[in-house]
Image 1: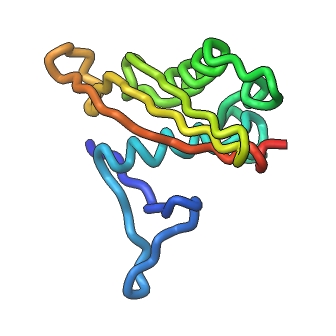
Image 2: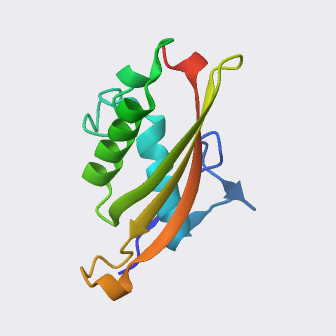
Length: 134
């Protein structure tokens, strides 16, 4: 069964076209779910306290890619069962604007079959505005 979710724009607002709420499925739904995990600080959603990721290693001048990579992997792998592995994570931190761009390469099993032949590689970029983390 394919998952379906309400479509959100890049700001997290629901997308409405011609008076109807739009939906997403497949890889677009997965990408939106991963964006939701990353864009929420762990514990900030009162109705879903386990949603999000720990931002502790993203805040401050001593940004450590290894710690940040572990935080991204922990959050995504624990909260999104279709992601089997994160195979590469690259960061681009703009110190002036405090925007962190994260490029994730992941192995996913969209149908959660557990069969290696059903797995595929996808890539997703997510940005986090460090000015909104504090």
